[in-house]
Length: 447
Image 1 (tube, helix red, strand yellow):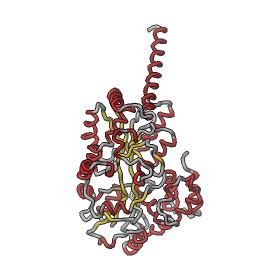
Image 2 (cartoon, helix red, strand yellow; image 1 turned 45 degrees about the vertical axis):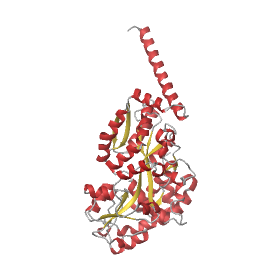
Image 3 (spheres, helix red, strand yellow; image 1 turned 90 degrees about the vertical axis):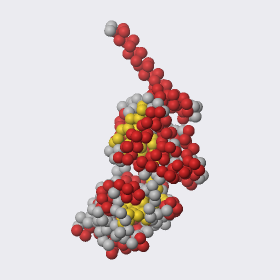
Image 4 (cartoon, helix red, strand yellow; image 1 turned 180 degrees about the vertical axis):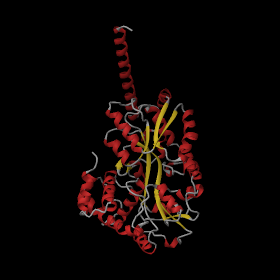
C-alpha cells in the first residue's frame, strides 16, 4: 500500500468513526427527546446485535434465570445477551469511569447496562456518566408510578435519597426483614423495637449480631438504629437530606444517640462474652450463624428469604419473619442503569424494557425470589395475578404489616460518613470526641 493510499484509508476510517459517533449520539438525543418510535429502537438494537449486562454474579438462581429465560427471550428480539458476572458493582462503575476518562464516549465503551442502586448510582450521576432520562420513555414505563404527587412514587424517583431523573429503571424491590427460629424463641419474645432487643439480649447474651459495615446489610442495620434513635422522633425523614443540606453538626446531633445504642449493646452481641465480638462479613455468614443456632435472629434484605431459605435448606425449619424494627423496616428498589458510553445503547434500551415487562418480572420472582420492581397498582387484574402467583409465601408476617412499617433508605451522601463513623467509633473503639469522629469521616468523603 503506497503512502497516498494509506492516508486516504486513515482519513476514511476517521470519518467513519466520526459519523458513527454522530449517529449514535443523534439516536440518543432523538430517543430522549421522545422522537424515536420504539420500532426504530428495536431495528437499531438488532443491528447492534448484543448487549453487555454487568451484574453481581453471586446468585446461582439469578444466573440460571439469565441463561435459561432472559437470553432466549432477548434472542427472539434480535439481541444477544452477554451476561458479565462481577463480584462487586463497583468494578463495573470503575470500568465505565476509566473508559470515559480515556475518551471513550457513547458507542465506544464496554458496559451497556449495570445492576445498581444507592452509592453506585450516585457516583455515576455525580460524574455525569449516565445515558439520560430513558426509564419513563420505555413502552413498559407504565408499570411504574412516576407522579411525584403520589407518595408511592418515592422509590422510582429517589434512589438512596438521590433523584433518579429517570436515568435508571427499577428492576427489583426489597425490604429489610428479620427472622426468628420459632423452635428456639417464642414468638411473643421476639423484639419489636431496639429497646426490646437490648432487653432480650440482657437475658440471652450473645444470641444476636449483625453484618459488619461497610457491607450494605450492616449499613442498613445501623441506619435503622439511627432512625429509631433520631432525637427529633422523625425516623428516617431527616436522613433523606444530603450532607450539604444537613451539615456536619446537624448530622452529628442526629446520629449520636443511635451510635451510643450500638456501642451499648456491643457487650451483649455474639462472641462478646469471650472477648471477641463476631460481626459476620456478609449475608451468607449471617445465615450460617442463624442456621446453626448460634444466634436467635437474623436481619437482612429478603421479603421472601424465609420461604426460599426453607426451600434450599439455608434457614432452620422453625424460621419465621417478624416485624422489627417497628416503623423502620427499610425498603428500597434496585435498578438497571445505562452508562453514558454504552457501546450498544439501543440494545440496552430493549433490555431495560424487557426487564420492566410483567413476564420478566414474574419469571425473575419465580426463579430467584427477588420481589418485583414494578408497581402492582399500575397493573391490570390479570397482570397482577401473574406476579402474585409467581411469588413465594410470606411466612410469619403479612404484606400489610410490612407495608405499615416501611422506611426509606438513607441519602447516599450520608452512607459513607455513617459507615466510616461505625468503623472508627464501634470497630476501632475510638475515644475521640464523637463530633470529631463525624467531622473526620465527612472530610474524607470522595469527591
